Length: 199
Image (cartoon, one colour):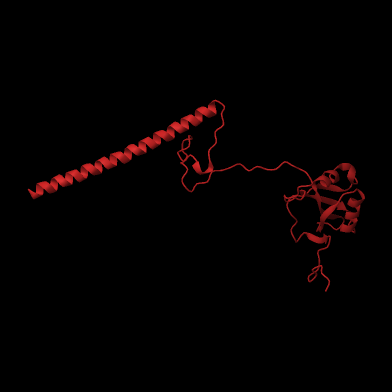
């Protein structure tokens, strides 16, 4: 008789556990239906031209409509577009000013005794500013070559055929001169120990 009572108690416990499991599953199905209905309503609203707003804390964490994408998890971030300012007023100077782009011009077939200062004077005479210049090693001592750094606007002017003599060769210099190629730098870098401060 005692075994029978134990068997009945065991069956009652299993039945109660089964009912609890059914309640949990029923609740999950109801939640999923509510979520699907909300999705359909958002799609219908968007299709009719209405705008929908999704609060940041209430992000739809269900799977995306695209196949092969994983659903958003609790720690996943939602990408937001970067918005850049278009105002060019001089009164608002919060942004970092980007320096103008620099291009390099290869100048060759110059007389061998020419110095970087001579080249700089030629550019200054045409209202162009040289940012930096390298006198380069040449294969022959009958001429000299230079790599001249100019801003983008000055480069366009300097690279025109009416800017230079017919014997001088100009073309855009790509890359950066190797230190073995450089004979002289203009303007000259400060010598070691100079920090620009009076002692």
